[in-house]
Image (cartoon, rainbow, N blue to C red; front, top):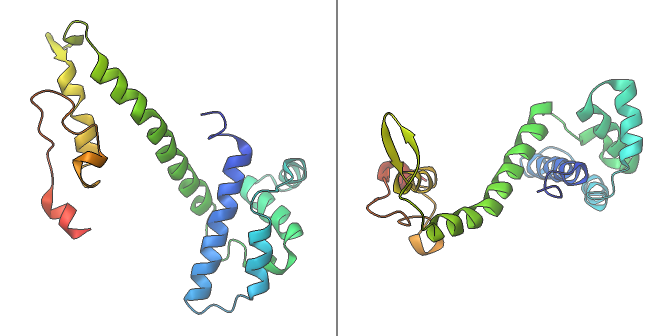
Length: 174
């Protein structure tokens, strides 16, 4: 988790998002030179965090600091980095990717814990009744309802007597 949520990983992800944005804008007809995309692609994982920190002290904005630093590394890409985007584009999307990867890491561990649980059939009391282990199992099918076949989703059906609730209209619309 520390490596996943580390600064270097986050900044590399920001740079990949900027690359995806530039490629999509080029596909949509924006006049972005191939050299700009090549230069940006060459610097996805070599951010100098000290140099970016210098920019951040001066600019007082983390995203702008990394845009300026990446512009120094990839001068041909400078005019196109972050073009038309907000800071939330990189910060929010990067956080979503990191959260998903973190959940993927935890999912296997949670399944092992729940399937190996052999103690009393309740964790806590809720509303003056015992909360059964099987009610926790409904979390997985309701949060991953359109995720594909059950053999690829081992958490579905792991709790006894629970049937995943599927919103078939939502799943078919995807």
